[in-house]
Length: 206
Image 1 (cartoon, helix red, strand yellow):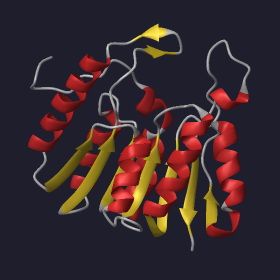
Image 2 (cartoon, helix red, strand yellow):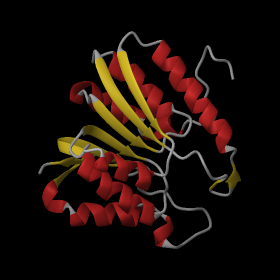
Image 3 (cartoon, rainbow, N blue to C red):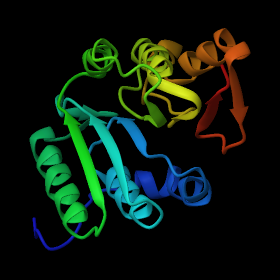
Image 4 (cartoon, rainbow, N blue to C red):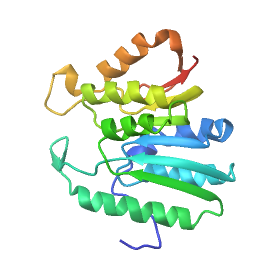
């Protein structure tokens, strides 16, 4: 990959989250961000560029194991995906005039999130984006652990609310049941923010 430019093999982030983040992040100005599921770094690079325009310094934690080889039946070389992530984010940081602290957690999210809690990061993050495993059992654990790490007033975004595993009618292979369960169980502690059908955003109120 040419180290003098960004390289992505898909436009998932542009389609799903970019326009939402462009609208609310400049006003929200999150100084401490956590993303679960970093892939090639499209969301990470966007955060670096956008937050560099409105903050002097900020911290981004990126969690991804970069393991596995299939996505909806397609074979993917995750070692190449990780290489693109590291080159893309290095390029974006090098082109930022602000102080960017990027912390990479090469780990499954349940381990990385638990470790952050043990490290006394409860209530630490302003904005958390959950876009890792799409299996309901993983999404619900990501949501509960992330909520502990989120400060009061902070925001969690869930990607792929209506995503479905190709060829499966089993609801536990999709994120929706986990996101709905989380928002119902935590209903007295959150405010559901408006968003498109493919994403859900909530704010922690207590």
